[in-house]
Length: 638
Image (cartoon, rainbow, N blue to C red):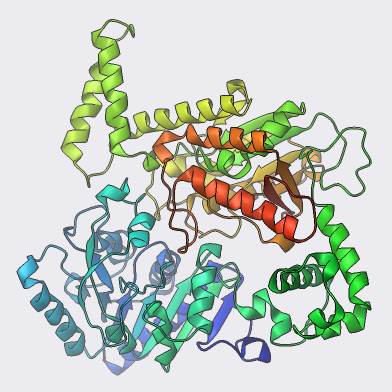
């Protein structure tokens, strides 16, 4: 854990503890909860917990369950109040928060059912105000909340207190922000199915808790964490009102801490060790801040922006500028698999062996082409032995409407005698769709058909990029088929499948994503499975000769100082990539990206990201490209 008591966090207005992993943070918070429960039990008093839902607290609840099972932690004297509930859902709906809490905590410990409280999502509209008032009264009658657990949304919401919520707000019925609904779209198998309203504790209700722990994981939360911890209190970011709480702590992982000043620009708040990595980060930041190309930075730019001691160590700005210009220029290559017969001393990827066995891992169909479609085309046309492995079917992300279109086609073909089969399967899925309605869980048959839709799209996309279908591998990892978003658990069978693929291919290079993502997201789980498989075969000869390149994933890109390989695309290559993305019609809209991005068509976001990277390289004084795809080299810890 990184200390919160130093000059480096002088800009932070909330005590913020940074942990190496979400698990480490959750162990600390679970221990605090357990200590309070045991102390209160010894006093003959109940413990009142405020609980959150979503993927963020799942690891905390798993640790509490472990402590109950292995350390005899009893919840018999605990009373719980949940932050919120979707309006219109009953407690048995698979996406209701009452059901979530039963699945993730209540059914696994000795909590008394009568001591668990979740807002009533089915209360009649005219009775909603009275129901919310009663919820507030129940908290008061229980003695108030001792420890409140929070996550944070990308809009800065806590609970469902969306932007515009003030510190005086109490439990009430609210309208959900469009970004919040997009973020929940996959949970509900489509944005159209996400409820438009919710009942939530207010900011004032949260601030009344005696102690607050806010948890956040993954780089997707970095921006809002920085604004919450270092910005001024504002209704535009309701979480900023936690600055007013006397006993609030943020417990976050390193990825979520990435935009705090002490992490992103430590030279602005204290002395730093000017390692090559820190120097590169600082100088590229300085170029962006001043709006100058690298070779135009002068000594005054350094001294006026907290970097005078770098010049003391390294000499003139000119010398530093030349060094960083060369380093950045050397990241650029049109040969992502390495250029055979070339001098590779200043190239990101080695020349030999050629051709390379290149493995691209895509957590779901689309992740590959979205993030590195141009690179896929380059690897193929340059003669490397490319394999694209889709780790999961991605069937949970297919809207029901796309299934209905597929069913209609299947029925017409069968009825017209064109398919050579009957239409019994199509009719079965059609009946199942009608039976489940908008909010029901998909049957095995529905999920199978949705998986076939995504396979078809992946094949069409690969053809567009020049990748033959025999180079595609569909892994269909079991963790995904057995689970739902935010509730997946990777198991040994998943690792075994990954290891079998690695052992069969013995790749010279692997392209993967999921590093730094929310630990329960599909990319993060797929990356963890890769890491576990690599650890198991770490002594194999091929592993020693394998380079791993990380891509960020849809809607994101590496910061310039993190880029180790930049693959430029010509206008024609970039347009070809966009056409490859377009083949994934069931994924035509995405919730990927930051809260500031209003456009969310997949191809529009790819345009913005890849062209923005090219513009950044141009502004640094390097070549002006149409678009650039980026990768970071990564070495597993064995």
